[in-house]
Length: 280
Ligand code: AMP
Image (cartoon, rainbow, N blue to C red; front, side, top):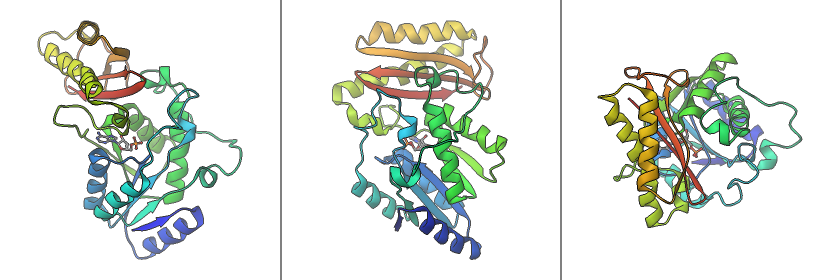
């Protein structure tokens, strides 16, 4: 695996791949890799000649009091995992490479960011879109791979690709979970065993919502039941949001839409903020 840290070198390498007629699949990450990330890489391997992964903990997408400093960065372990998955190139830029001077230009999105995670993280998606647009322009991939785990992020990137005419096909891949059902996340590293059990509150609540939806199609009723389940059973969990939404538009809905209802939420386990969702 080639590890490339600067933009000029990776552009040169990509030009060579393209001259050889090779297709490029790209998996952007912030590292601290787990099976969720690796599932994206495996799909990219199946569908492309060359897989490029990036690891960059993007400061622009962290709010002031968030976990930028303590975000896990086990880079040697990550490199080994990527080698094993036969990733051709790891793009590993520094902050100075990605943001060499003050930014005048940001990518923002209308509507889709003013709900769900966007409410408690108001600048997050501008940071995500800006860095993803930069990465797309640097890597110029044919296909990109994102996880359903970050549902709102995936939908927003899908819209950016469409609106800004990036010639890229986006794949949104299923959530990989622990046996317990807990969605894999780099932030699970912050949790001890007891907290990991408590973190299941979210997935359990979403499943409860799903179960209720078979009998009762009222979205408000389902959302209330999910919230009450956590409030009653998990004293140490703080709910950020638990919503029932249209999976295509992210709008709140009144009644369950067959096959395109998104049950989604974010909770705090101690200081750790976790998200999850299911589509019913
Ligand atoms: P991150 O490193 O957290 O920025 O995630 C990089 C990519 O991996 C994003 O597209 C995430 O949605 C995806 N991802 C993270 N966790 C999971 C998971 N448990 N299952 C599938 N994809 C995931």
